[in-house]
Length: 175
Image (cartoon, rainbow, N blue to C red; front, side, top):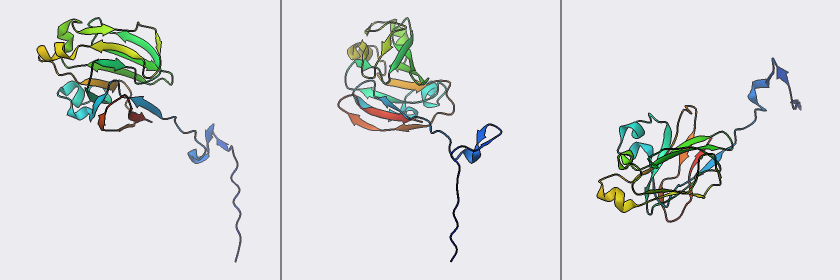
């Protein structure tokens, strides 16, 4: 019987790259919370081709149990749409997301929406961003799905945690 000992150096560089990617640093996973209590569904189930065909990017949606919309991640508010129905957040790790409340809610010109934050403001996961009067959406025949998409991030790996959540919970994990 022969004993073979294989020594693997900690850092072997070939042309500036680590050998075979064995020691490659793993990407940090980001937990993305539900922006509202309710039923988490796949983006493909949203009744709008712009979202369900992922033209805006990968994502998920929540059929809301209430109108309190909170931040799914820690980051900075980058933009708030003038009609108050959508906003963007840049996460601390560079992850960008768009929260879009309802379908065709841009037509309401802000009616039923109350913003709690300002552009440039830093937020933590779970902080209240806005509130929406779901009755206003219903009376105007607007779908109330709260959509979270990750625009312009084609290599995104997203793992969705589908189901009904009575409070804000982890809806997805992004690699």
